[in-house]
Image (cartoon, rainbow, N blue to C red; front, side, top):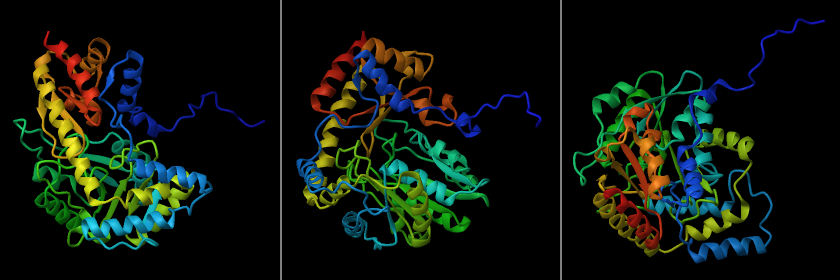
Length: 398
């Protein structure tokens, strides 16, 4: 009889020891448990545009209920290509350069799995959207973090040290993940900053993976610039986007990755075996969404500016130091004035005793201590939701 080791197998991948479950989604569960106003997770509590809901209903009624083409329905891919040309001046082949995925989240992990090998390194700005680190680990790569530093005053900009960024690049660097407009800071990277990153990508032969899911949510005259539109970057950029934020349908899970043909071919292979395809009727609705008039996008951004300027005074009055975002729909705050040990203790108090859910800043950093004085609030909510949050936050002053 074969020798059987007395050592028990633990059955788990070592990779999962390097990250936790989503803190953002845990805070939503906490909000539900304690009846708190949920300013934690970034989903709207108001309706999506009627036109795209009707388009989804019509697609179901028309029996668009079976598999679409694995890498995306032709109508949607054509619409994505058309809009990238209109919005960013980027010519895209919908047959060879677009992969429709189950949300931008799947587009990101499919991309990293398609391009990374063991020993590769991925540069990530922090604070970062919490999926990027785990996605890098799952793909076998090592994340390397570069700090975004908060502004000294409310109206200032988040900045990074050019020398620190350069030090993060070396012969092992496979890719840099860039999120602009940025979650959680609201930073919109300028053309000068993007050109600096572009120059490093060219010098070190690095791929840029850009998450542009908030591209239409901009304030104060800022401009969204796609990395792929810069000279020299068209053939070394994967542009990730989706419907969730622009059209208030975070539960539909329709996103996409746009990349040069050779990279797209690899992404499509991973995507096929990871999820097969995104929901077919919702892809048809996506075609309708991408055909909305220009006025829709201007109204979207203005609506979120009003919400931003509604919440920030309430946070300031309650004692938070706010860092005014230039894009996306989050505001990062400093909680030093409240005297709590750290952000986790504070958000626990906030959700249980004050009745408002927020996200502890430490969840956006590689080293939790770096975010221990920060908390993120989402303002993609109805005015009455923000009013109720303001009323509850006023208890902090007492």
